[in-house]
Length: 143
Image (cartoon, rainbow, N blue to C red; front, side, top):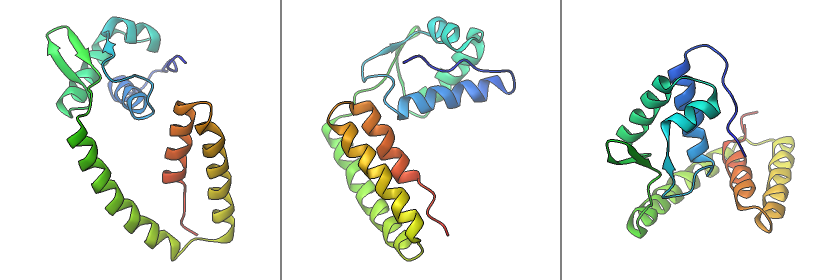
């Protein structure tokens, strides 16, 4: 699944957002080496905004740079994954409790539909399931 070509505007910011979203959505597997030139071509930009986005993502530890020309999607250690899980359980539990106080019947039906799509995708397409999981987590729940 290719990334979407970008239009003009604040290109560095848009390239950063596009690559960041691709990372969040599992577009790149851990260990994947990202090539600036290839990303620039795929996004329809010059290498400069891609390089800026890559360096920003490296500084945020979303990517790792092992040499001057080698940028990769990091592997997370079991300890890091446990820490993330623990934090998410606390925050998401609190968020769910707060949302439950304000949710409408229509919003419940919307969440149920997303959940059905998630369950169906889990059986056949892990990336699609991940997108539905994210859709569920970010669903608008204010009345």
